[in-house]
Image 1 (cartoon, one colour):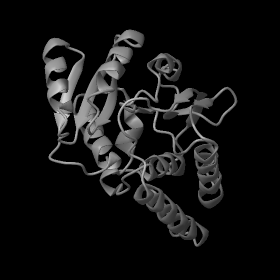
Image 2: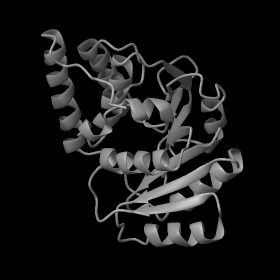
Image 3: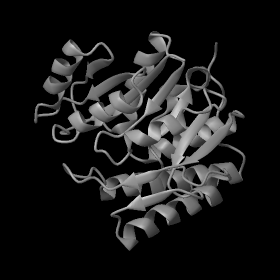
Image 4: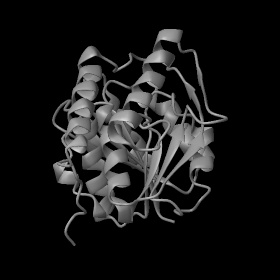
Length: 244
């Protein structure tokens, strides 16, 4: 199946080359789209150079840093315009291991959304302190309680979408930015009856570059999930499929 890996970047010049090499090694038939938000460290220029020498690598440049969700939406649009059948989200920093990518692709598009999960049996995290583990597991428990979705790792960013599912979603209505974007997308897929499958992965804390996690990202997720949960309780929050 025609497959695209989307890698959003902002100042990832140290880690991006290693991640692109890993994907090309473990999944040599897939294409890679680097979506760069005008990184001042030269990440975008590196992506252009790699694209010029590798027919499986492409670069999409954006005017500035606008958040993870906006970058992925741009990547989704790029993929759908070019008739890709599977669209993959993957971080640039190496926390999503390229060797786990074939496992996410094993079902050959049998599910609308496949999530590389840290919190199902067989999943794990490496080099995370206890407080980070508690934050992630606690956040996912709250998501399940507030939104009523049966996903162990709704905040995970290593995932595969069927392009047909992305076309069914009203992506222009998705306004979430940080890790809340992953929760938002998981819920939207579940609400229109999409199938979600979780595959265990090993998540490795980055060893190059700086983490993008911040208080604003956490607050956005907490605020929006709480609001969506309240709307769900009164029957007002629903997701409709996009018009054909």
